[in-house]
Image 1 (cartoon, rainbow, N blue to C red):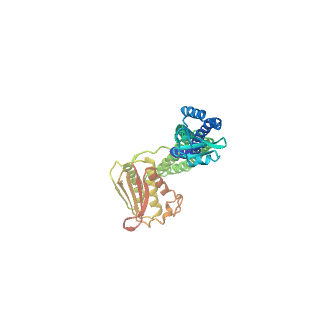
Image 2: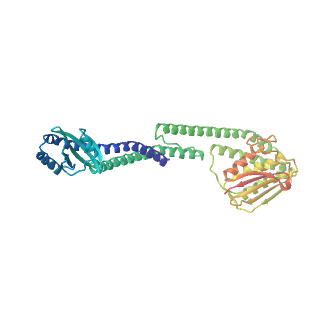
Image 3: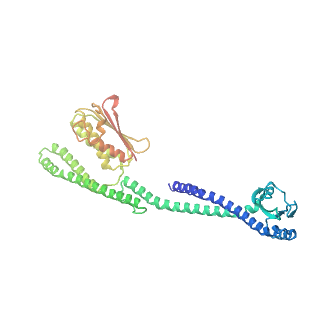
Length: 420
């Protein structure tokens, strides 16, 4: 942008300087020519009195003296056809002047200034010749000076444009950098209030927007933490009720489930109050642990759980808690949207470039429509956040969530692609 602004100023300044310089150059040339003609007329006027007296000897001496000290050759054409001074042709302009008209006419190699002088009732003509080099004397030097001034003005304009562009673009670049930092989640980024008033207003508005976004996010985190904290009371009651169960075989899985829920609630509160940076984990270990947990529930609902898990380690750019939450969301989706006895399979394989791919396939009725991928949209009476949790986990790792049909065209297939 700085180069474009400088080019615009250069084009504008060039047009202005041309509009000024061309007429000035013509004026300088015409002025030089007029000055030379005026000088010639002054020299010719000095001879009028001497020639009009008719004293040819005095006129001859005056002409020779004038020719010896001037660059304008002088010739006197007497009525009888004789000449005094420099030999010159009797041109049409001389014939016109011999009839009583003082004229200035173009001649070969210059101009001739002609004066009609009455000598005893007859007309003599004084001719002063101005060569072309005298008509243009000093014009080249004046043009050179004019061009130098134009170039200096153009250079000053370009320098001023470059400085002005810097004054404008530095704050703009700062605003661009701050906006990118805000877009990438750095809510501490702030713009410097510098530059022109308009840019300062934009910077102030951007800083106000950043403050407002941070306030809204902090309020949202506190709201999530408060909502999660409210679950502690029913969890405590559930734990006490579990401890009251007399049968140890029944109490143990319930206690484990309550502990898992309590762990999830604590993590939700901790993440809401102190959002962590993206972590890394071994996908093989996390997926195996969650499959083992859900396998026990699968036995209770007469479901066949098949697991084909690649050996680890399979590092992915996602924290263990987030990956566990995504796996729970996908597996819970199978249990919630397929009837008891529906078999499902979990496959973990290395991704083609890096990371890992997790497939959860079931033999149920399949996904009803694409709307289940919309946040808060559910076809089975749930919150509709499960698949969105998995989708956001995949996106955070640099992967994606895709879906399709299960093996043999039956059921649903959800694929969680995780980046490294």
